[in-house]
Amino acid sequence: MGSEPEVTVEKYESGKFSLLCESKGWRPESELQWRNSKGVHLTAETETQRVADLFNVKSRITVEKIDLYFCTVTQRVHVKEGRIDAHTLYEYVPCPWKTVGIYVGIPIVVLLLVGVPAGLFLYIKLLLKSDKDGRLKHHNLSPCQWWYVKRTLLNSEEDLKEFNLRKLRS
Image 1: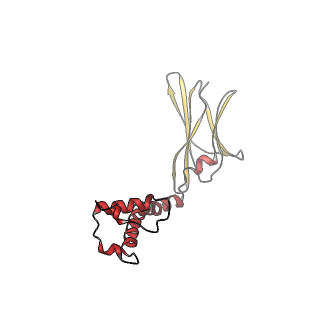
Image 2 (image 1 turned 135 degrees about the horizontal axis):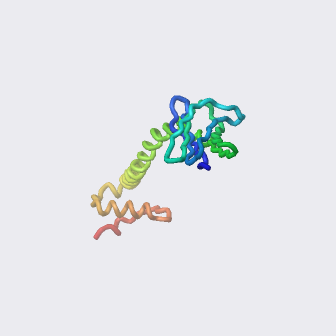
Image 3 (image 1 turned 120 degrees about the vertical axis):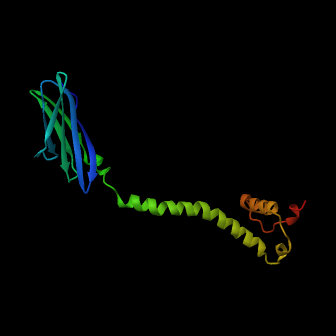
């Protein structure tokens, strides 16, 4: 007696699914029949291939409706059945939101990853330069000192009402 029929989606194109059913190792030759979830038999051509003293059988069918499909292989009193369900078919249908998500989502993520840190750095720099009494405007800070100011402000767990530049002087 042959193998369980395996039903797969060969392709999805223009709203149509090409389904393939294969079963191997039958002797003597077997018959293959397709049907939908309502039990309606569907027309398809079956191809039988002889390998040594066994027979392999396969059949393709094209369907438009997302449904449950059965492939039954029969040989005298032996019956084996394979199936493919609607959930599996839905996986092959392209979703417009996936495409939109890729084309919109990736630029947003890149903008956030690059823009937020750069914007935060510029905002802190602007805040420090526009101190109300102008004390920072008269000091030329080295890049190392700016880094220290930025790190201190970003890592501080308390609200800093005043930032003492004397700590930066060496």
